[in-house]
Each structure stands twice: as C-alpha cells, then as structure tokens.
Image (cartoon, rainbow over all chains, first blue to last red; front, top):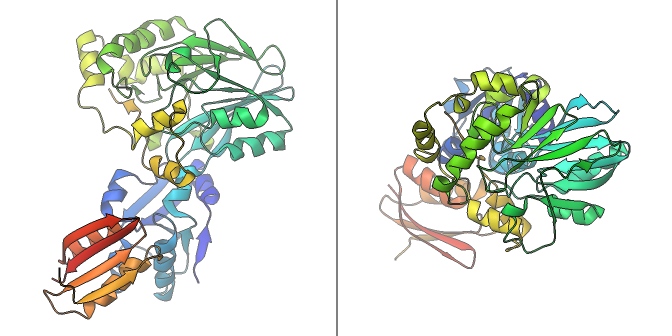
Length: 376
Length: 75
C-alpha cells in the first residue's frame, strides 16, 4: 500500500515554496484546463490509462528516491499508480487524498497582519481555484469577506479564535465560485451585506452595502469602509480596513485586472472599470496594501502563500493599470478574453438564490480555474 | 448495434471502468465491438482519451438515467 498526503499538507508545501514534484494522471484535456500550480511546483502529466501495463512511461522521467505526489480527479487512480510505482522500486511516492476534487475545496489561512486595535486580518487562499477570501477579527467579533462555499472552515476558524461571526460581506455577485455568505450569515445570525446594484435579482433578504456606511468589527477602530468600484460587475464594492488594507474584489489583482464581461455586459462596463482603476483608486493612498479576491498566476503567491501588493507598486508594474489609450484599454478587456469560468451562469443563479443545486452538482460547477482576470 | 461482449461497470469508480474495459477489449478480435455500461461520470472523457491512444474507436455512446453506454470497436 502506498502512502497518502492530504490537501492540507500539499497546500503547506506550496505556500512555503518547498520543491514539490507532482505526477498528474488525469487525462490530458483535464490537465491542460486546470492543474496544481504555485510555489516551487513541478508537474508532469501522464494519464493513468497509459500506465496500466506498467509505469515505464514515467519511470525514466523520475528519480526512484525523490518525493513524488501522484494525483488524479478523485483519488482512486492516483492510489493505483502510486502502488504500481512502489512495486517498481519508487520509495517516496504519495497519493493525494481526494484528488483535484478535494484540492479545489482546500482553504489555507494565511495571516496578513495584526491590526492597530489588537485584532488581526487573515487571507484564506483557495489554492485549487485561486480564490481569496478574508477574515477580520477584533475584540471577540469577526467579519468574513468573499466567503467560499465551504463555510465550516470559517466557522471552525472562528471557534478556534473564540470570536463570533457578526458580519458577512461579498464585494460583488460572484460568477466563478459559489458564495458561502448567505449560509454563514444564517448559521451565525450575522448580517449579510451585498452591493445593491448586484443584488437586484436575489431571492433573499440582505443588507445593502453603501458607500460611506462603515461597518464596525469589534473595537470601533477597525472599520470596513465600502468604496463603490464598478467594472467587473455593476455593483462591485471595495473595502478599506484599518486605513491600510484595500480589498479590491475582482476589480484589481496583483498581476492583472478584472474582466467586465461575466454578466454579459462587457461593452457597457468598460467605462466603469476604467474610471475605477484610473481615477477612483488613484485618489487613494499609494501605501494601501491591495488584497484581491483572486489570483491567476503561480508567481502571485508571495511569502507564506499570501497574495498582496502595495497599490503604488501596482500603478508602476501592473500592465492593466498602464494603458493610456482608452480605445486600447477597451480592446484589451473586451476582445480575446480567456474562456469564461465553468458553469458561470449557473453559479451566478445559485448566488442569487434562484437555483439550489445539490452539493455534488455545486462541486462539479466549481471545478476548473477561476478565470476572472484579463492580463494587459 | 451488435456487440461481441457487454461489460457492466456500473457502480465502479475510477480507475476501475477503464481497467475492466481494457481487459475486456484484449479478449476481443480487431473490428469486434465491446459495449460498456458505466455510472462514473469521469468515464466519458477518460474512455474517449484512452480509446484514442489505443487506436480503438468509440462508434456510439448514450446517456440515460445516469447510465453511460459506450460501443467501442477494437482497433
């Protein structure tokens, strides 16, 4: 019997930039569409069905004593391949428990900073999808921003920290993942906030996020200050926490900017996106630390797995913020866009409360990369 | 379609549908058809890719009540 490795162990290796060798045995189409990336990961693909008569096709490419993590879609085939490799004399082979399906659901909490009043800010990195969510705690209370579907992870974290979830916020109506916001708020008796312009079709009650209406978490000094920032969606809203951290949602990422087309209105929203990125954010302090809701490139994972950047640095380095010509900008964000996220229309409907798919269907809807960005 | 053999792989999860299909097709003559029934959704993409790499041909496939059926012509 071969050994196994959990998604948690793999996530920590990636977050710590440890050298990691992965043998992905899914079929090549699935591999090309979506794979484990980040940190110091090297990955090779050889479908399991090419290895049924023996592991020779990969044996030459790998060292018998190096650590190799075998993974597949759900964990069955990787276990078989890992067993076969052990029989062939590989000594350090592990099968990823639950495969890419489990990997897609893993959230790794990374501490961003202590806040001025004694609280703290954490980023939850969903390495399998590139989604980032945030947990603010202060004086016994917590706020969660852009929560993923796996609400128990945040609930357990709150329990560990001994804090009560009081506020749940989404920066916008998500199209790439199912929001856990409503469920978290229901379970905890917390307030669920949404931007009203993104919530015109939702089927449930919510509290509208409005510019100027600060939300206080714990001690009064931790303010979540909404900043209306349309472009990715009509209602997209950013938050400024502790006068230091700018949560940009899907408007601005570290290496790229948000795409305006996922609600089908690219042309109408290009102007809003430009206004947000080239005027509204520019009026803010260069020293704000940008914390986005996604990352798309392995290189964006920084120290300890965190994804962040100084706003002023992004104005120097992010190509999406350096397109002077408006027409060129319009072309960049409306033409040659990457494929839209898997099942994004059903994901939007689920987040509006219009449909309530079974859990298995929800997991299936979320497979694949997030693809919310355009690169300049 | 006349199948030389029918393989029931219902209820089996990956990698077993392919492992069994491979075994079953090895017992057939080139040109004969193997009919496979499976319930693992992943079987669809994997069987297609596997057949291609082994120069077998999927001549037909259906999906009814969550049962996937494939007719594979041995290459």
